[in-house]
Amino acid sequence: MNSTKKHIHYLGWIATFTAFLMYVSYIPQILDNLNGIKTNPTQPITAAINCFLWVCYGLLKEEKDWPIAIANSPGVVFGLIAFFSAL
Image (cartoon, rainbow, N blue to C red; front, top):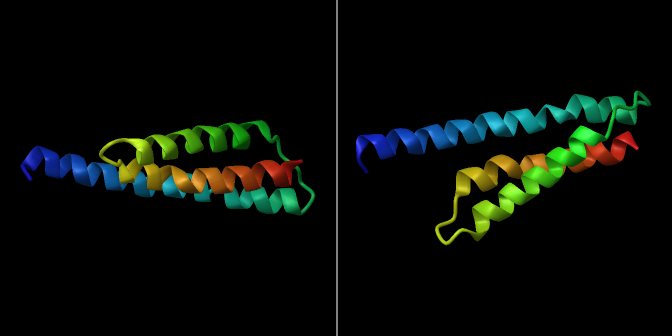
């Protein structure tokens, strides 16, 4: 693997980690929703749909794009939980 490909590979996994953290940050919103402090459900359902599409893209490519699929997987789960708990 040449130097540029190596850097891009690491960048992909760093971006995966930060995206994972972004979606895990829904946990406080979910807890607020469950404790009766309801939030707007529009953003989490939009994020869940967007993440689902990116997961599909990453897994359905001929050469799977694991960083994209992994980074967006928690967005599907936590986005849906935040959405349904906000209702």
